[in-house]
Length: 210
Image (cartoon, rainbow, N blue to C red; front, side, top):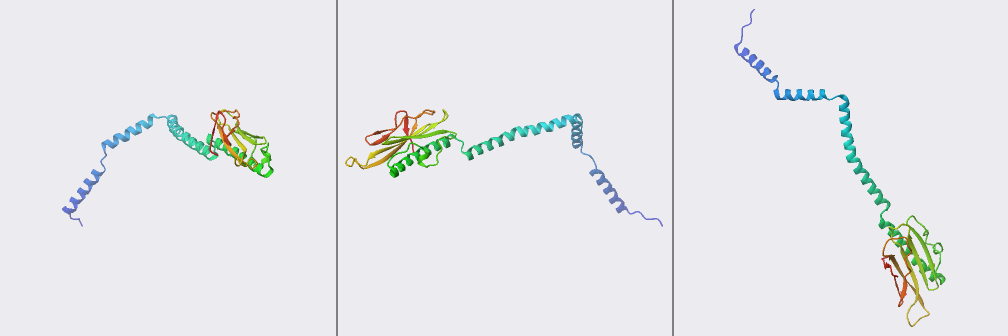
């Protein structure tokens, strides 16, 4: 039996074929870009491709690695207290402690000490930054922090035995002072002096906070 043709079905089939053909048409601009990319890739040798990748990697390394190293170095310096201020703080703290140690020594024994170790403060006579020492007389004691390099400040502390009042010359007490050299250097500062019952720094040094 022969099938009858259906005009409407034929029309739908033709439309479907036409739509499929339109969808499969290529884009000239896209084809041109694909050909250009393929051509450029062919012109680059494997060795050049490798060098290009290495160059990119090196640029990234040179840019970012130094930044990380600098940040790490700064962090290390801060955490370890390697700055100049930390070194100065060490000297000021040690000399101030020696002043107090001399005052305590005189209260306990009626005399000052000529030895840093004898005061029992746990202070070393030499560190990486300073040399520490103390000397005394009957009425005064002087403690020194002499810098071991020319770019650090040296310090001197003094404790003087003075009358409690002008009327009571026999009753004594102690007064102290901490002085720092006006300029950096590894020279021992001049000892402070007593003026009208008050300690003052010698020429070339100035009073510093304890």
